Image (spheres, rainbow, N blue to C red):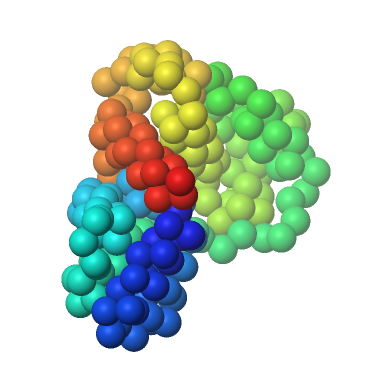
Amino acid sequence: MLSALDAGARTAHRSSMDAPPLRQLLARIHAFSPEQIALSRPAATLLQLLRDELAGAAPASPALARALAESVVLCVARAAPAPAEPRSPRSPGRIARAITMMHADLARRWTVEALARAVALSRPVFARQFVQCTGVSPGRYLTRCRMARAAELLRGSDEGLSQIAVQVGYDSEFAFSRAFKRHHRISPGLYRRQSAAIAGATLSMAA
């Protein structure tokens, strides 16, 4: 992606543009993941416009190229989720086992009681130690794991939403879609389409 965009930046430089700032913006854009860009609908649209501007037959407009690049960076920054809550660098053995169990079977209907029982702790002690180790409750941690896995499946597979829902512990496509949109601030269907479009644009830029 960056090499093709950089070529456009050099063309713009020959049109009297101060190239280094544009190259720095393009480097930042190149560092974004498809997931980050997919969180912002305007960023995905602006990225395609930037690609068209730099890859077009006519010389790129210096002012327009820079404005588009700056807008992409700003849109992605505005759409970024809040920073993750601080976590303890190490987890006690029983909490670590509970985390391993959750990751190993995201489809299971885990409850705090079931997890506590599985690692031989009382519910209050387990819940307290879990928060101390991870910074979040067991339920929130599990949701984050499920949503991260769902995003991976949406980007990397052709499985339907109902199939993905089952794999990450939801009984229905509706419940999964609602949870995904609440967590990622975008519907799973739109997330998949935008991720595919961004991946296609990236391949095209890299060609």
